[in-house]
Length: 454
Image (tube, rainbow, N blue to C red; front, side, top):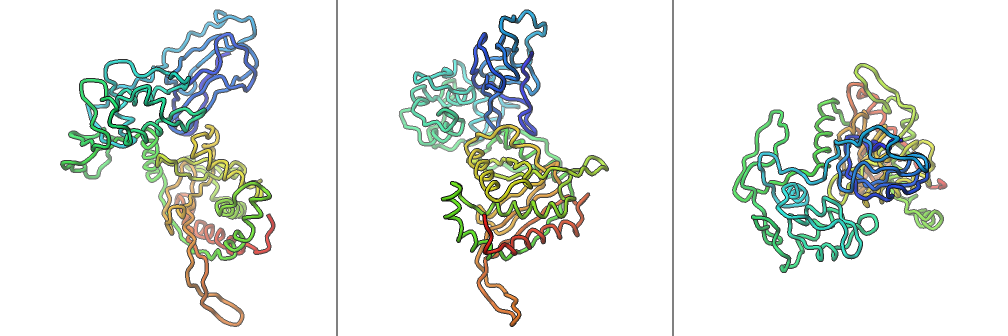
């Protein structure tokens, strides 16, 4: 039986083989990890599909493999490779990248270092395994070679990856603070001094430009090539705006009761459940309730057909330390109570920041929420996460003077207020539905009971 590289999430077509966990001839059990792989979004492990023996590895550490391509063969104990007639694929490529297109040079920064590693100078990169036994990925070794980082320096870098592995970010964070004694980069052109600005003398790597005006470069401008993840995000955002006519409705919600309730119970919640109680799970609970009442925002479009989704899978946009964005998905969110929702939100958020999400945890969403209030923003106009048709942004909660209506008359009081922004696809969600939906979410949050249990 051939083991194929599994689908690693939306828009991900290939992965790098990081490390084989099993050798040829080793016995494996079903669902036991046999190889570590990495994409621009997540690191993951590929499990064995059944009990048996790993007969042959078809790709090596450092190979870049397409989704659906065979990576190994597994069979019964005592089996042989000759019993399988399918030849090893020739499509896997070593991870040594090609030079940048058009001979372009790039500026400094994290994304630029990724591009600089594409033009390797002569000489071998550092070894895959250091004296300490720590494994270094092909990308890390290529960047280290182009920057003249020695194995001793690599060994001194604290690793934030799985098992203490040095990630691309760890190495790029190390470079600006590198000691003056570090050797120059190998190759005919020496690297600039640490911390020095890299001025791009020629045009950057070109992306397809549909209209618009080309930028004018001035002396001292820096050209920073997007890394692969940022390119995927850029393409996805442009595709979304091209696909869906976006409309955004705004509502200001009085969440005073919600804030007071959380202040009252958050300490007891953490003591009992071992989890911090943030506002995000409460926002998602309100959105899920509104989706139950108005399921036509939980749809997708296929030509002139509307696909009404049975499951309510809420995507939760999360900012990564690199500055990129990832959207882990809370599946069947309508089946979770507040405790379960808080556990799921905290778990996905922490593993997203650590780069430990599994591929199936970032796909299958039917509606997305993004918390722009995290950055102190009061509102935003979010872009729909295709193929969904709606997304909500929650703004910062601020104390403001507001009119309070009472049976005795109107009063002015200090209230906790926030904006909700609802962007929706006007092909299938009209203003009436889009506006009523965000108003309903606000009503649910405003009606949060001070005596609610958790």
